[in-house]
Length: 376
Ligand SMILES: [Zn+2]
Image (cartoon, rainbow, N blue to C red; front, side, top):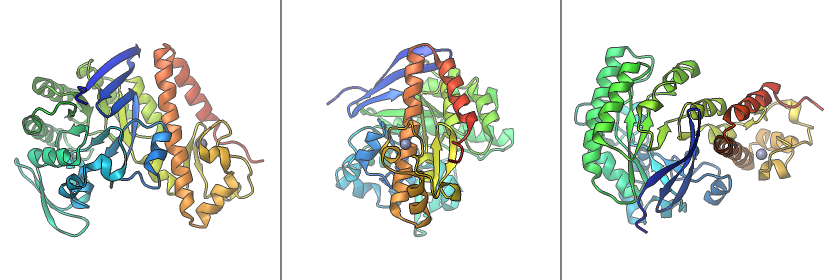
């Protein structure tokens, strides 16, 4: 039960990598996509269904869970894995990003952030030390450093100041995390879209030493071109023998581009959130099930997809249940979307191992370029 946390790289192809993260709760095949279980649930999905899509790990949100139902309560009830009936690994974010984006009346100091809950207006304080304690109470397998991230575009002086604060917080997070065998602490590189700041951040993190390294501060409105611009150099600044996690990414083509540039792990609400608004992601791109063109279509969403949604339901049915506001609409589309995202990851893992990532990527883009199947 005291298996150490470890990462083994099995193959590389260009900058793309495939490997496995080992934890006491199981293995995480990389590159890995982590579905987001914000409030101790991946919305519209039973945990066993999430596992059946091929997910090895989930992400939980510290900010949401500390406010409701509270980290101490989850701890008393046996920890987050038991509480939500998910026995595989869980990564929790630090709460920092969501405090900045969701909470009211924030006050940021060197010590941490005081804020009011968006749920009930109650007052809370998050710092490197409190974030480490909350993530410990949740029982998270991969803990993230508490950091601050300015929304882009921000001027370079503001980005530099914020990054240096995050590096001081990273050292405090490391100190507060202590020695917890089988659990990992990841540092988070900041520095916006400025190469020198990204380099300074990477050096600061490596001097502290972490079990893995995240690339933070991207996917915050800078656009794909700017993001890929940073990913052309940022992953290589981080240790080769540790997992690299790109936070909050993304759409299928963002994910593929990030893996091509050396990223091992990603998370995004997109497949589940889209599933609740009638949007499906398929090999041929995005499909809007709201559209009347599907009303009489007996074909599945994707004839080549082997998920339960595509095996058992027609586009006409998916259109009907969305229009009728039936709960199964979100369930079926979320299942398919998560399955498709995991299928992309599996495809990339196999292609990297076989040394044919470029061929796989060309096929991925060519199929998407064809667009959705024509009307009957
Ligand atoms: Zn499907």
